[in-house]
Amino acid sequence: MTFSRPTFRHPDLPPNSAGFRRQDYEGAISTLCAGCGHDSISNAIIQACFELALPPHRIAKISGIGCSSKTPAYYLGKSHGFNSVHGRMPAIATGANMANRDLIYLGVSGDGDTASIGMGQFVHAIRRNLHMLYIVMNNGCYGLTKGQYSATADKGSKSRKGGVNVLESIDLCELAIQLGAGFVARSFSGDKQQLVPLLKTGLSHSGLSFIDVISPCVTFNNNPESTKSYHWVREHSEATNTFDFVPFRQTITTDYPDGATKAVTLHDNSIIYLHKPPEGADVTDRRQAIDNLEDHKVKGVVLTGVLYINPESTDTHEILHTTKRPLNSLTKTDLCPGSTALKAINARFR
Ligand SMILES: Cc1ncc(C[n+]2csc(CCOP(=O)(O)OP(=O)(O)O)c2C)c(N)n1
Ligand code: SF4
Ligand SMILES: [Mg+2]
Image 1 (tube, helix red, strand yellow):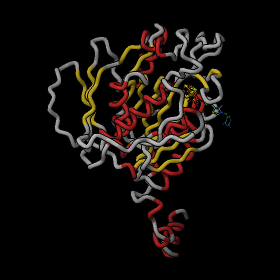
Image 2 (tube, protein in one colour; image 1 turned 120 degrees about the horizontal axis):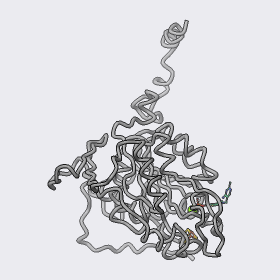
Image 3 (tube, protein in one colour; image 1 turned 60 degrees about the horizontal axis):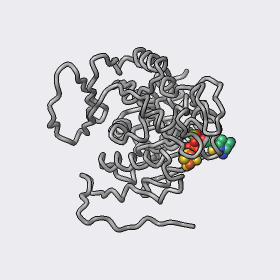
Image 4 (cartoon, protein in one colour; image 1 turned 45 degrees about the vertical axis):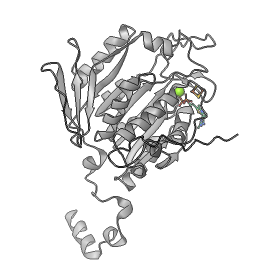
């Protein structure tokens, strides 16, 4: 059976500053299980891209395999897309980014896709600081293949069938911070208020931004003893800070109290204002960011919000000094400048 999305929208719904309407960022109707956390993340992605007024044709969404990796079909229907092989999203994103640095790259993956088969790809994309937003829709299981535990399932967590996970879990945020990602955050699919500004910040950051979104699998892993269930996360989460994201085109009208607020300017001159609780840790300090995650883990608390941010981050192109022009726009003359240029290059190595 196929479903098509109704095209009728209220005629008074306003467009964004680039003239696009919300429906320009939508995709096909979801075929995921009703109540799946991944669908809420899809909606948050639509909202974030609409609010940032990103031209849909300048976005490239790339995914691996899994229920999570199917979601790019459900948003950004007018954008470029590549549904790749299990765990290989970062390789495809790297190739595309090298060929055309002018697009906005959105990598979508699952905890199985990233923390198991794609682990090698994940760590090297971070090391290179590839300019992309990397989202993991984290349900602690392989939803698409009927709910086996993934490597992010917490030790002692119980699945719906009652099996206890006896293995240590991998914390992808901690790993990302350790490997040098410039923007790392964690959120919950059921917290759109927190997730949308996080996505907007991640999309405006230079280099790799990583967001781990806990996203309950209602079919295989949503019982109260699972640490990736709606119930558990609602009972056991704590935010690092509250924050506002201000795109650089927008006039800053709000007043922020002294002392409790830190303004971090991103490469495109947008600003993220972090309002820290009195005992809050400094999220611009890498070592403290890791300690903060570990401290909360010991207390059995899921820390959400901005976990680490490095405003000085430099992306792969800056590190490698690549040409400012996208490779796919270079002509034969640019790529083959002739024998005189070649002789000059060779002479430098003699
Ligand atoms: C090379 C390869 N190995 C195994 C599979 C089977 N497989 C498909 S999806 C998946 C796991 C998906 O889990 P996750 O990335 O967490 O996505 P979710 O469905 O939970 O959103 C596996 C093991 C595959 N498609 N390809
Ligand atoms: S199996 Fe789980 S992850 Fe997959 S669509 Fe259903 S609820 Fe979502
Ligand atoms: Mg999963």
